[in-house]
Amino acid sequence: MADMKKAEPPKDPSQYKGIMVYLDSFDGSLTRAAHEMIGVGRKMADKVKEPCIGVVIGDRVASMVDDAGKYGCDEVYGFESPDLSMYRSRPFTDILSGMVFEKKPNILIVPGTKNGRDLAARTAVRVQSGLTADCMEIDVEPETDILIARRPDYGDSTMSEIRCEKHRPQMATSRPGTFEVPPYDDKRTFKKEIRKVDLKKEQLREEILSFKPKGGEDITVSKVLVSGGLGMGNAEGLKLIEQLAELMGGSYGVTRPVADLGWAPRDHQVGQTGKIVRPDLYIAAGISGKPQHIVGMMDSKTVIAVNKDPEAEITKYSDYVINGDLYEILPVFIEELKKRKQGKGRK
Ligand SMILES: Cc1cc2nc3c(=O)[nH]c(=O)nc-3n(C[C@H](O)[C@H](O)[C@H](O)COP(=O)(O)OP(=O)(O)OC[C@H]3O[C@@H](n4cnc5c(N)ncnc54)[C@H](O)[C@@H]3O)c2cc1C
Image 1: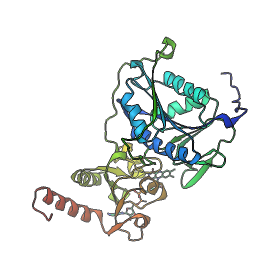
Image 2: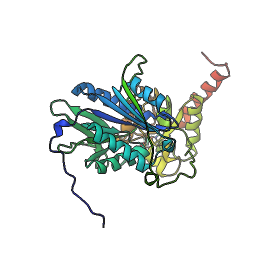
Image 3: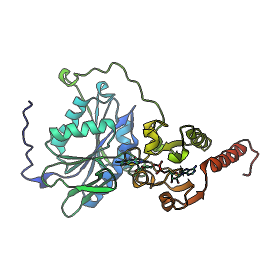
Image 4: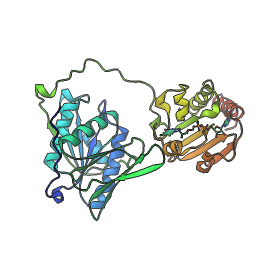
């Protein structure tokens, strides 16, 4: 069995200062989840009046480093090497934990993407701290400098608040899509440093032979989402939902039971155990509005519910409610949109 040592908290936690934000990237650009984390880090840094420190790792990082500063970091450290063009557990953990030892941040937040979750867990072990994963609320208590990390628990609507009183840095990963992307400010000034990394052979034990992108659309970035629930009655109903989404230039979403039944891929599930979305327009057709679904779409700008039941919970979260059968209502939308596209309908 591995030799397990008890993690020792630092003797003087007050020497840990600043909010460090690991900035996840893909194909030479920061991910949306990374931008969200800059926003969270910026807000906390302003509250405690300490710097927001970004860390970017990749092949060529200059433009991402600039992005990080313009979106809100006060200091950005970029680490580059051709061997870092794709995520690799060992060297990324070496670099991020090295930055923790060097800068001693009080808080370290990491986007909860697949790679971010791997990196955060490994870094937490390396720096001997705890980690609150999958948070939907991340804040700091200015009087105590304690990180307030809240995440859903016990299956449904319970929110747990987790505090890491003794160990440093206090660490959390986010649930991507939960937080807003902060505004870009071209005039923002910030400190930056790009370091060339020379990786040793033992840091590169895994070899990337090929990379196949998963494909499919990312519903968290869609401006319009048309979602279908069990009210569709069968898998065929999804065609109607998809058709409307396509005509509106958006994507489609589903509830969890629809994905469980295999009517739609899991990547399209909206909600607590699916994706958190915040489109400009969310159409919920045949969806009852259980809390686990609502939590995934409640920040949508405008919500239209189409439901047979005028009392359905979703109506409380909707700006417009169309009471009726989705098989009668959605075709009317589709026909009208088709006419408009052909220039025959009302403008
Ligand atoms: C731990 C846990 C995690 C979960 N995570 C998620 C999650 O991430 N996402 C999620 O969505 N759910 C999640 N759920 C499930 C959630 O609790 C609900 O069961 C689910 O959201 C209900 O899906 P629904 O609205 O499609 O179905 P229902 O609740 O069955 O609602 C169907 C609705 O369709 C209406 N309807 C029926 N026929 C028509 C018609 N022809 N035209 C118009 N309206 C019609 C009905 O009036 C009803 O309001 C989770 C549950 C648990 C326990």
